[in-house]
Length: 132
Image (cartoon, rainbow, N blue to C red; front, side, top):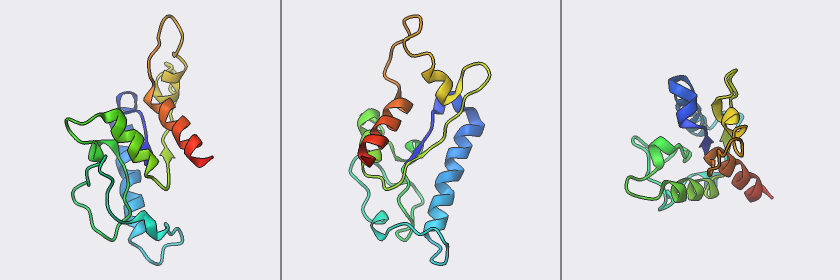
């Protein structure tokens, strides 16, 4: 599961998330690579996620929201269930000088009436809770 904030990361951050997902898939297909994922990292995609195209049966399943969230379905349920079905969570975190980025946005919660469900925070809490 690659976790990142689409809105604040811009083109470069979104591209980094895509490259991380691609690299994990590539590593998973190399039987000689020193980082081997457990065999149950392969298999059937959960109903909450669509299978990215192209996808080879021998590659690890990597949940990247832009590839796996289903149109017309709850995106919240999609990424929560995608994260719950994941073996590995890779959070891509940033904080820029103007208090933007995935962490910068978290610093605004509760300030001047800024109160909303934050997906990055939710993903981090859920990942830690599932680990425990």
